[in-house]
Image 1 (cartoon, rainbow, N blue to C red):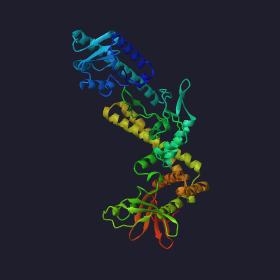
Image 2: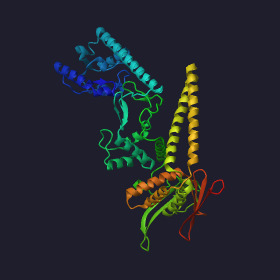
Image 3: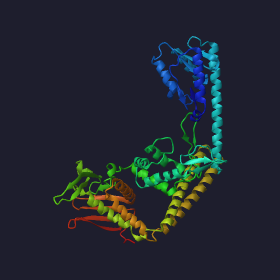
Image 4: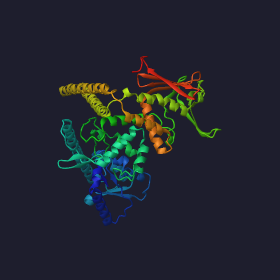
Length: 530
């Protein structure tokens, strides 16, 4: 039993074929050994013969599983193959030569090694030809219909192509339209916000399960893969990325992008920051398990040899005076592995974490570094939205240029000219928005934000593991976004050099008298700080 698309499995296709084949087998007195079901696999392209249950059956036959012969019963001959007649005939010849009798409910026909005479051969070839032509026509009509829909969307028409929708949307009304499902939209935004905060997919899924958040489908709980699919789905920002899907085959993107097709549930700035956070996580480790001890992993380097600074944790130990201390250190990897570096210093992690965070937080809390939060946030969203529009416009322009060069057609050159103009307009709008954002930043204080930063720092060593992990995740994500360079000097000078952004540098030195660090901040160009 076979059908070409997964959509057909929701109807009566399987039940009908099962009932017909079982009834026919009973009438003939045949014992059913096994039922072969290929769900959503195309016989037009021959995929069933290489990847489906039918191919497994053929391998079993070739391996000698049925030494006394076996009957392969199907509803119609086209359930076995809809390929070109020549391929079908050769496949049937090989199968019958191996001892298989092919039988069909339709016409009560049997094809075996002993009865494939000229009449049977002609019958097989004619039926194969008709089936192949029918599948070809269906494929062409379906492709043309979807192409027409994509053309209408590209021309600016607003309509629902298919009632299939992302898990956080539903299709309602006549004419149909997409409507957000409030509770699920909140879950989607939460996933993006926690990703920006530095949490990984596993941790987000765990939190959703712990909080009893229902899944969008039939799964019993959230999995990292489900979180990943939501984060990677362009529908959250309203985009449809059309794809072609030949019957029984995988979806293949066309390269087109339709904006504002779905309701936007995640603003462009949040989407951009989440994407950047995922890219950052993919290139560095998050620390040792849930403790997230080392905030500088993947960032800190040895000034002497350029090797990374590795974390060495010896745990908590009690001093002679009864106090407890964490004996955690940062050590040059080049020195540890005998790579010729003479920087053998072991930097006490707790001391240097505090010393490095102090200038970073000071710089973040400078009054001139704040702007009205509502206005800034709105403009940041607008900038992110325009950045995406500009990127898509450039991609379309390049595609049109390639097509114009390849075909030389006047229509392609005209399309490229129009798209170039649209791309230039999008770039100009983006530049203007960036300029407005630059001007409004740095105007007012933000006492509430300062208090939140101070509270966050206090949570870095919180007794509650969940609170501590969340705080350290956020701080680590911010450090990797703000700090361009972080180098540990030694052994002659014990200190750290740090580059913040693209214009400030910090020098941090250890003061043995006070048992702590002190720092100086300046501009890279030598000018005084504003």
